[in-house]
Each structure stands twice: as C-alpha cells, then as structure tokens.
Image 1 (spheres, rainbow, N blue to C red):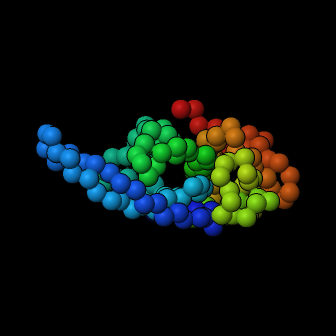
Image 2 (image 1 turned 60 degrees about the horizontal axis):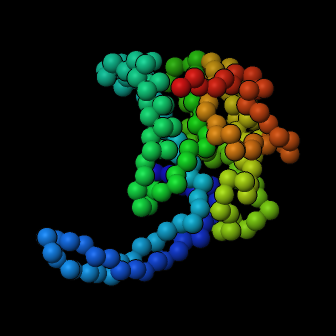
Length: 176
C-alpha cells in the first residue's frame, strides 16, 4: 500500500454508463467514483534475504523485479491509474546481513509553494531528500551501494540546494 507524500484533493464524480449484458441490450446505469486529480504516492519494500535462500532468488530475478516495478508502473493503465508515471526508485544494497533501514519514503519530503491540494504536476514541487541522505550517512558502515532510477523531471534538494544523485557517494543509476 502506498501513501501520498502530500495532502490530496479527493473529488467525487457522478456519471452515467451503458453496459451491454447481451447483444442489443440498452441497459444504462448511474455510477459514482472518487478520483485524485494528482498524487505523488510513495511505496517501500524489502527483498527478504532469508526467504531468498529457500525460493532460489537470483540477482537476475532482482533486476527483473526492479525493471518490472519501473516499467510496469508506466504500463499499468486503467481508469483509476491513467497517466501514472514512476518518478524515483531507490534500492539500498546492505553489506550487513539482516539489516535494513525500512520506510525510506518517510525520509523524503515534498516541498511546494502551492497548497498540497492544488498540486497537479511534478513541476509544482521539489523532493527534499535531506533526511534520507542523513539516515543513509548514519548507516554508511552497513551499506554497500545504492542503486536508483529517476525520472528526468524530478528535482531533488538537500539542505536547500539542488542535488544530483550521480554526485553522491554510493549512488549509481540502474542500467535497465
């Protein structure tokens, strides 16, 4: 389950629809749904190294998982997810067994001059990763490397300055 990194405006929409139950059917109905005009939703997960021993998980499997999450998000098109775009994916590779920080999305803050509910596009905000960089630095001795994919339109800041992940020690871009 993901959660929005900002407060959202939920809109209630009413409409009509015609659904053919059989050839020549003219059944019509009313419908109602709730939509979010825009939301930047954060998710997190953990690759369980202990379970991987029993499932036979390989590095190639992990690469396919990462590719599937990134490409699958772009290609998951439904009425509720139309226009969905992946923005940032970070994978922390730990050097210490059975260690993980967890909930990395909690260390990323959305910063905007707009009220949260008025945000409608990635260009309406920046992502402040100051706390994320701090927690990663605090655990540097337990981290081997950090892989990422980032959408070109995402702007990252740390301590009020623009940041490029390529310039930060231990970060390297995924090669999908």
